[in-house]
Amino acid sequence: MPLYWETEKVPKKKYTQKVVGEDFEKRVLESKKDVVLLITHPIKEKNRGLLEHFEGLAREDRLKPENENVLIAKYNGVNES
Image (cartoon, rainbow, N blue to C red; front, side, top):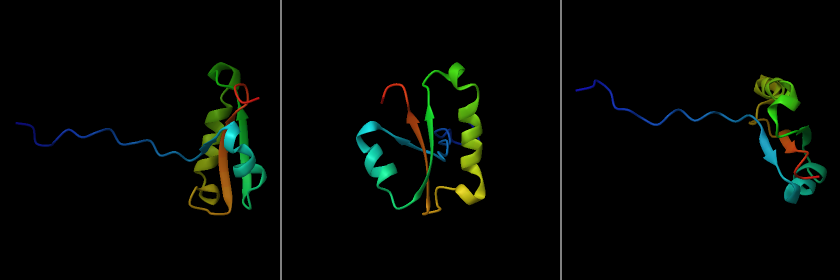
């Protein structure tokens, strides 16, 4: 008998939020917060590692999602344009 129970995988902590076309104006343009927005391409090869660097920036202490003054978001520039 195993010494532990199998559990679900630990969920990945998301540091950025996804913005789509329907709420772009409300969440980005009309927001009272400062916004750091990455407009990205859905194909990873075309991003050339930019998404990983952006996630690293979002992990920094001064830009954590708990900070109410900063919105860190990603926007799919191809499908939403």
